[in-house]
Length: 157
Image (cartoon, rainbow, N blue to C red; front, side, top):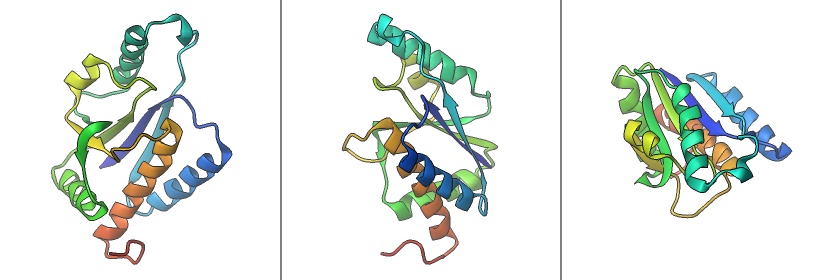
């Protein structure tokens, strides 16, 4: 199974880029992982929030394949402990899915079209984080999930 993290906008903070790179390297031991960054829309200030969400949603939808299992990272989604998330990862792997696509939306969230296409919603926290930080936190949680599944000493209860 290939795991894709699809984001709107680039990660610009050096410390976040370094952290994301570190976990991407570690993930190579367990799975195929890809970070896809869709550039921010040009002249975004000229669009209403609804127009911006629709345009970003259309760009995300163009990156998807029909067979993709789409999980939106959404504060109203299901939340998991790290061990429960590891179990969820395992269930996705055992289900035979070819591509598992997680999406971090833009600043205003997801379009109605994306909500309609999604298979699941997952919450990292009830708190709000910057979209750039979410990338690092989520890549680390995927790595943590694999170490839990492999009984490796990274995660402590």
